[in-house]
Image 1 (cartoon, rainbow, N blue to C red):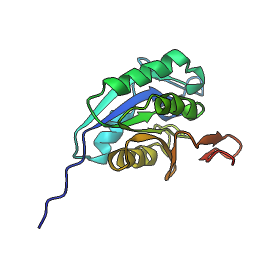
Image 2: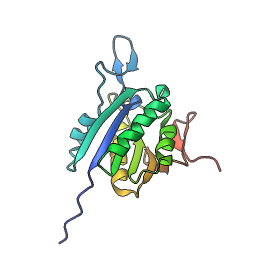
Image 3: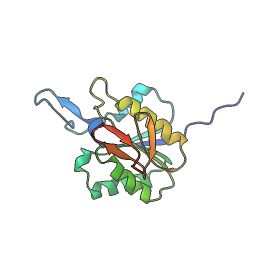
Image 4: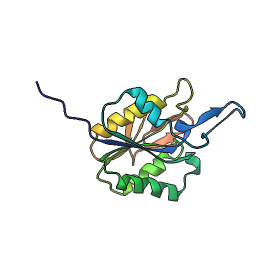
Length: 173
C-alpha cells in the first residue's frame, strides 16, 4: 500500500471583501468588525484540515476601495510567501483586477483568488464552499493565477464578474 503524497503547505491571505463582512444589528449594515478580523481561521478550524496552513490577514477592505497600492501589497505578500500554494480571499467586485496584477508578475506559484457573494457570518453563505474549493485548487493546479468561484476555475486572463447575474464568467470572444 502506498502512502498518499502530503498536501503542500498552503498560505491563505485575507484582504476583506464581502467574505469577511459582518452584519451590524444596531445599524442594519454590513461592515468589518472593530478591530478588523478575518473569518478564515475559524473556517479552517471548522473544516478540520490536516495540512500545514498559514493564515495571514493583510487588510480588511471592500474591494471597491482597493487601489493599486493595495494590489502591490498583495503581490509582495505572494512573493514573500515561502509557500508555493496560495489562496487569496478577496472582494468579488475587483477580483479580476488583482488577479491581472498577480498574473502579469509571472509568479512561479499557484495563486487562487476567491471570495463570496454572501458574508461567511451570514446563513447560506457561499464563503465556506468557495474557500474549500480554492484551497483544493491551489494544492492541485499548475503554477499560475486563477479565480475560483462557485465550483468554477478560470485563468486570470480570461475572467470577469457579470454583475447582472452575480457570477464569474469567461471574457467574451
